Amino acid sequence: MESAIIVRYCEIHLKGKNRGFFERLLKTNIEKGLKGIKHTFNPMHSRYLIEDFDEADYPLICERLHKIPGIHTFSRALVVSNDIKIITDAALSICEGKSGTFKVITNRADKTFSPNSVETSALIGGKILGKYGDNLKVAVKNPDFTVDIDIREDGKTFIYNQTERGISGMPVGSAGRGLLLISGGIDSPVAGYMTIKRGMKIDCIHFHSFPYTGEAAKEKVVTLTKKLGEYNCGVNLYVVPFTEIQEEIHKKCPEEYMITLMRRFMMRIAEKLAISLGDQAIITGESLGQVASQTIESITSSNSVVKMPVLRPVIAFDKLDIIDIANKIDTYETSILPYEDCCTVFLPKFPLIKPDLEKVIRNERQLDVDALIERAFSKIEKYEF
Ligand code: ATP
Ligand code: MG
Image (cartoon, rainbow, N blue to C red):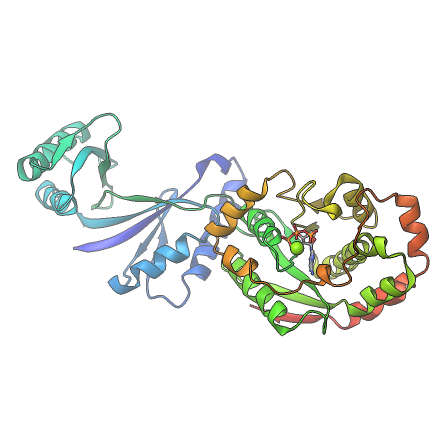
């Protein structure tokens, strides 16, 4: 018997004129996601159909579909002709080995097909009970599984009993572009994932303090970025040498201003890069009150040097909730690898918790901000994944 995968998207976003745009984008993203895997792919009445794939590739296709924002659910289906005898056999075959309660749901787009949908459900339900009645019972409310029979106008019927949840959200590219400040930590990859899931295509920027932070620390960020790239239809990472800026701050400013001033440099360089890339927002993994640099006073200080919107998707999340998502997207284990981050280099004993913006600006005057930014910017390295 032939098999297919039915892919569904959330109808809720599909109002009016946006519909075509949304559907075309999701189609393109799925095609990119399944690149290199043999299959055919076709739209089908508010859904997509993946067919002609090799059985052995099914797990890989599932894995890819689970990483495409905009996919609400998908189902593996048997495909047969619109013939009640053949449909019944297929329904019986997918119930083999199952136990618990079930319900048959028939949807008959082909109105010439006889019997009608209610009769088809009753007939096939009866056959299933006849064959597997020892293990299966009908439950109209809350069955353990459903047997879905979708009789279509083009002469094909789809039969399936398993529907997997996708990650939902919006197709990547439907909500503009943003630049994620990615550290090697737990929070920023999660912030990136959440933004991607809402349809924003991201680029990544990382500040690296060689030789204080080594190759392993950079590799860790590369691994995290690649993982995000799987949701983002590929991703570019921009690595900024940050050592000179840190050394200058260390030399010329009071120790407790280190993190506060560093943040302002990061934001300025991020905005400059974002503008040059056509990105419309900066994204960070800041979470309110988590550490000294994430009080509202610290955020005010770093925010005040940029004009671009700064998105902070995990601002109100508890650490444990962030970790749940990090586990789900498989970044957690990488994030907790114990390599130095540029923020742990020159870490003051007592960082400012509530920096006073006027004093911050006064201290920053000791530095040639523009020249430092120019030099770091000219040495940015780009990696494409
Ligand atoms: P994370 O878990 O993402 O590292 P964090 O809780 O450790 O976050 P901070 O170290 O205060 O918090 O960093 C706050 C945010 O600043 C990070 O989420 C990230 O967006 C950005 N950031 C910090 N360090 C870097 C870096 N080396 N390169 C790029 N962005 C950074
Ligand atoms: Mg960190």
